[in-house]
Length: 264
Length: 317
Image 1 (cartoon, each protein chain N blue to C red):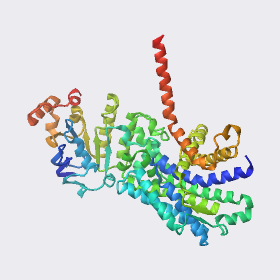
Image 2 (cartoon, each protein chain N blue to C red; image 1 turned 90 degrees about the horizontal axis):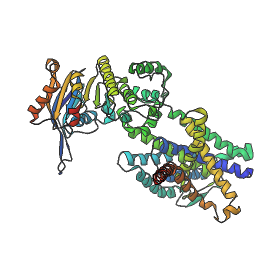
Image 3 (cartoon, rainbow over the protein chains, first blue to last red; image 1 turned 180 degrees about the vertical axis):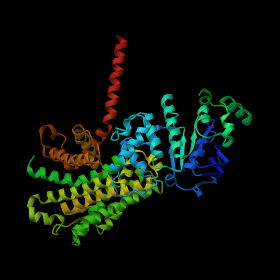
Image 4 (cartoon, each protein chain N blue to C red; image 1 turned 90 degrees about the vertical axis):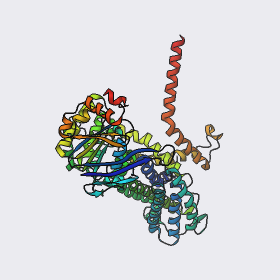
């Protein structure tokens, strides 16, 4: 379970460029929940996610994961429990290493890295089986350098790497936004399958309102660093894109100023 | 080339190849331009020659490697804990080491150990002339075996991944500061061991012997990669740590052979006007590094300008 209490992050505090990215956010996410975060540019979605991941440290507030305080824990230490995917598919994999080496590296998440062989033959069947689930024909290419693969293939492998050593929390920062529509659908589908199977608590940022309502179990809308909408269950099932946009106008007093969101 | 000149070049090439392996780790694998090398090479030589004078030549090599690792640790801490840019961190350590090296050598700019026995003495007494070469080969074999083994371990792979994609490494719960630190320590240990070996090989060491070693090492890494690395890739269809290490070692030997060849033929009519002497070799090394690193960029520019010309000619006609 992820608990966020009074979390605040202000960039360039005290200067003319001061920007309150996240202000006083309270959020509790039950284990196994799949949250979709939407909101315009600069709404604070990515900042919130980076605060949870440890990329930024908050100004005030508290974050606990499974009852453990992780507010100021360094990024690599909390990565033991957190898988993180970014928009750029190049960020998640090491291009000059093989698929097998990348998976082996990710498989050791949270464990001590010692002087044992990095690539163990005994993991190969498991890796192949996991790659087969991606359905991209990568299961026979364990020795292929990741740099030779397409963006979609790399993002699918990153997703596999993030979930291979089952984390407690999975953070997806628009992980399908840089892919072509067909590949994006496929990666999103894979994400839902993996989440359903492993029941990992998941936070996903998306610009696509439709998938924010269709995928996952709960939808959150952010505006100016605050949560302005939080729906789940029946209310969410009955929600349509049009009604959501209308609610957004009512709550924020203005229309969604985001082309990408309106177009999608 | 005479046999003596060839053997000498091979011996030097093999000794310096440990610098090349160290730079292969810090420059090629970790992607850090580590200038500590000039200082840690001399540090290794200074520690080693003082140990020879004290009568412990073998201990001298071990101490040289350990001191090199400490120098690498300092540079790494400056980078990771104090936020100093990698290049400057190396320069700071290198500069500080100049004073330290003088202290190690009792304040003398150069120290000789002509009459003392070194690590080479035993092998020379058995194998006479070939003794030096055999000993250097043995050390190099042991060092590269350990290096290749280490880079294939879980921790070694974390080091390789750090140079490849640091953000991915951190999100895989690896402390990238630790992997960089261990990498720089190992690289400088290799460099200092090379310096220590050279000091005992020539039975002397002086405070300026490390000057330009980083460029010589880079030249070896690049020559090895371009000539031997590409050849090995064509034959084995592989680029891994083993082919990489073999390439840079061959690169180091090739570099020494090129230098020996140039120096031997500097009286040749075609070269005489250049008046090349041993002291011009650092200039040559720099030129080699500049040409080989900039080669892809220059090639691109030439291709682009020929395309422009063709387009212009086509629209003119």
